[in-house]
Structures are given as structure tokens and as C-alpha cells.
Image (cartoon, rainbow, N blue to C red; front, side, top):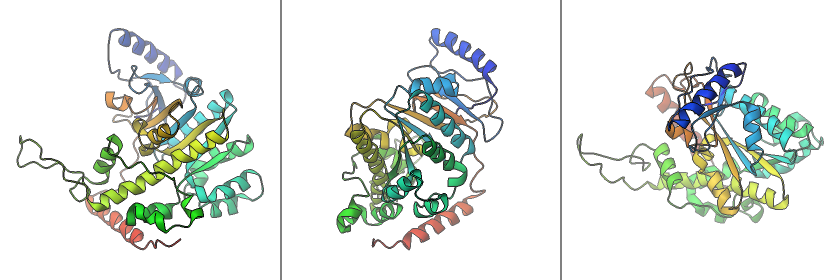
Length: 357
């Protein structure tokens, strides 16, 4: 479920009044019946304080007033969703007006290209070589250029926070053992410590990655009504896949922590795919392990089931300080065969990865 921004403030104000009245009566979940999500560029911001309050509609300025008080603000995105990208740009701009000591941190750039990012921000290279040598994502021009250009214009640091994709893929193929084969300068491109312990994030990843015994995501029953059998242990493939995922999470967390330790007093806005920060898990919990005293906020996107009558479900309210309601993207695949073909192509491409750097 997600937030929208636009010419709907009168309805939002009325809805806010209704939310306050219902909250006073002890209501735990408040349907949001105000602004709609008319198209894919629309979004709705709802303040939830991770489920501590009834969902309350908020303008971008309202949200920025709150978020500027945090040390690190994670803005989770639905990759390639126009509404999600518009929201993160609007929030970055508004937060900056309230906190000029701001740093932009991004999943979309990897540690080894930090010198390229710095050269572009310093006008030492043009955008074409920057995009090529920094391995900019395919949707950089439409989705991330506004963020980087805003940072460049206002002389804000940009942290290339992620681990290189090749390292992540090789950890997925070989597990943690891959790190032992890296040269010292290459090893520094990923977090020094990975947090692979059991917990809610690992459970979530295993369930997401699999849904079958091969990935450790399935509970089995003999027949309807039977008590679920114990979940089968995750496969070696699933364990290595989780190590690859955590390589991203811990590297981004370490990158943010290192920047804050070198630059006391700065605030960080970090952009990542929502899985990395939803419900304060993933990169967020790993940052907390490194810097326990940080005050961290999360803006988490959710798809509204009914875009004409969007609301925040109780479980969704727990996923962030603010929930960003979005209209759902088109179905990626029309049928199961299309999905299988796509997965097959991905697996074939990954199998061709050579783990020599």
C-alpha cells in the first residue's frame, strides 16, 4: 500500500479528521477512504510509526518534517515503479530543505565505482562516461538521474553503497568461501562481516526465495486439517542464496556506517529495493548492529489492493514509519510458462558467471 501526492489535500484533511476521531475510539486499523490512486504515477503517504498509530495521511512536507529528525532515512522502492521514483525524489528534496547536512546513499551503485561517482559529482567527467563506468542501472535516466543531479547541484555526497554484482553472484554460487579467493582490495568491496544468523529476515527470505522444499520454503501436510509437518531444512542452494542477499545488506549497512563515522553529524537518505528495509529488517537491522544508537526511519512501499479505495492493512502498517501506497504494476507474466522461461533465462545467465576477478 502506498502514498500518493497530488491535488487531493482537501479530501486528505477530512480523512485525517476521521482517522483522529476513530483512533480516539480505540480503532486499531483505519481504512483510508480519501485520495485515490488514479494512475501509476500516483502515490499516497501514510504515517504509521511502524503500527504504533492509526494510519494517517501525510503530505510530502508533513513526512519531511518528521523524517528530518532521524539520522538515517531508508526509502524503500518498488523498482521501476514511476510513482515510487517520484515519491523518493519529492521526499529527498523536502528533507534537504529541513536538513542541509544530507548525504544520499544508493543501492544502485557499487563500492568499487565510488571514485567514478565522486568524479562525476566534481565535474571531472561527463554523464556518458559516468553512466558507463559506474555501471548505471538500465533505468538510470528515468529513475535515478533526478536524485544524482539534485545531489550534484547541492554538493551532497553520494555513497555507492552496494557490493559489486559479480561478488554477489559468486557468493551465491560458492558461498562465503568465495571471499577467501579475493585480493585484499577486492575483499574491501564487500562488508567485512556478514550476519547470517537465524531470525525473521532469514525466515522471510527463505519463504520468498522458495515456496518449495528445494529452497527451504515449504511446510507440508498429509491432508487438510493435519498439523503442518516441520519445515524441511533449506537446501545448500538456498543457504548460498541467503549469503548472497546478506552480502548486499551488510555491505550497504557498513557503507552507511563508515560514512557516518567519518562524517559525524550528517544525515543519510538511503535508497534501496523495499525487501532490504521492509519492517526494519535486512540492511536496517544490520546498520543497527553496527551503530545501535542511530535513529532510523523507514518509508516502505505497498501496493493498494483497491486503488480507488486505498487503505493500509494492520500488517502493512508495521512495515515502516511511513507506508507509501502505490498502484500495482502490470503482471510481469501472463501465465506460469512465461515465468518459468524467464527464470530459466536468469539461471542460465548466472551459470555463465565466472568467479575470477
